[in-house]
Structure formats: C-alpha cells, structure tokens
Length: 268
Ligand SMILES: O=P(O)(O)OC[C@@H](O)[C@@H](O)c1c[nH]c2ccccc12
Image (cartoon, rainbow, N blue to C red):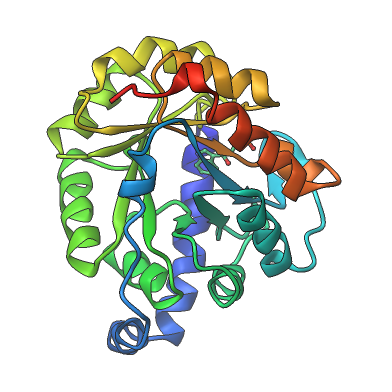
C-alpha cells in the first residue's frame, strides 16, 4: 500500500467517527451561520507571487515538526507577515491537525483559509465550510475522475474554492478536464514522499494560463520563491520552513518580499 493509501484508510476511519457524531444537517446549519466564504482568487491573480502559509505540526516524511500550542496565534503571525491565505492541516493521524485548529484560526484571522486534508466526500466539504474554511484541497491522486468532478462542483456550490492538487502529467490533464482553475503542483509525491522541485517546472506549462498555479512543498527560503515564480507560479504554499523557524512573521514577510520582486511583476 502506498503512503497515500495508508493515510486514506485512517482518514476514512476518523471520518466515520465524526459522521456518527454530527449529522450532515447539523453541519449545514453550522455552515449557514458562517459569514460567506472569502474569494482568494483576486489576491492570487495579482502581480507577484502570493504566499499561502501552512499550520502544520507533523508530516509523514519528517514526523513531528513543531508543537504549535496556539494555531490561531501562529496564523495571526502569518497574516501579519503578509500571507495572502492560510492553510490549516486538519488530518489527525499523520499531520497532527484537527478541525478545531481550523475553527480557532477562523476566529482570529480574516484572510482566506484552506482546509488541507484528504477529502473524498461532500460531508468533508461541509465540515470545512462549517469550520469557516474558504477553500478545500482536492488531491487528484486520491480521487476517481467522477468523484473529482463532483467534489469540485459541490465545493463551489457551497462557496468553497477548490484547490486541485497534482503531481504528474496525467493528473494535470485530469484536473484541467474536471474544470479546476486553481491548480497546485505538489513537489512531494504522496505515494513515495519524495520531493522533486523540478516537478513544477515540468508541469506548469501544461496548465492553461486561465488557471492560477500554486507551487506546493519544498520552499526553504526566498530563493525557492523566486525560482518558482520564474517557472510561472502565482502562489507558493509553505509549511515546514515556517513552523520550524523561530520568527514565522518575519519568515513569511521575507518570502512575500521575494515574491513581490519587481522583476516578477506583470506576468498576467
Ligand atoms: O512543508 P512544506 O514542504 O512547505 O509543504 C507544505 C505543503 O505543500 C504540504 O504540506 C502538502 C502539499 N500537499 C499536501 C497534501 C496533503 C498534506 C500535506 C500537503
């Protein structure tokens, strides 16, 4: 079984527990009490490279990354540093996240929020919206094409912007065919956990210019932001580098400054 398959088994078990505790109707009610979802696309389409900063405690490849006692305080630092959006891992077993983290972050920051999880059902989309998310991750490698298409549609009907994640050529084609307009190229292969920063360079030309291109994983500092930008990234998604550093606000600000470099302007 690949790492991705193992993760999906655990996610399905945890989902069953939550579904037994909270009905879909309850979730829909909670979602209806949230303010309307924020649209991240205008900021993502602006000049320069936007930064999505991630709240991430652990990862399957590295184990524990950081303690993060107060995810809302960390998110507030990210926002103060200039993050255009914040990603909150809610997968529990491998990434140490929870939906409570997402709710706490929502209570504190007003930038768009991404629910970062292994979403295979519309129930999880409703959970995301009920917790205050504005975006939801859909991983092509984890979904049949029909499920991908219907989850993209369902996400949008709930008000969520779907971020569709790919790792190879065939997955880019599937994402584009399914109508994705916010496409994340993950440099980490979720089946093997290997990081290859060249993946973005290879796949970006296959993504139509009408879509926003997100480069995810493996950003160690400003140099990587500039490299991804030169290869056509509109957005970078950064986790480990931010949670491991001791001044997340300044680290985000450095990445944002690199992405705002004049040489990278006017690429639309
Ligand atoms: O910590 P990094 O290398 O900066 O990576 C962040 C993000 O890209 C990574 O957490 C990620 C990308 N796609 C995912 C899918 C599921 C879980 C996690 C991820």
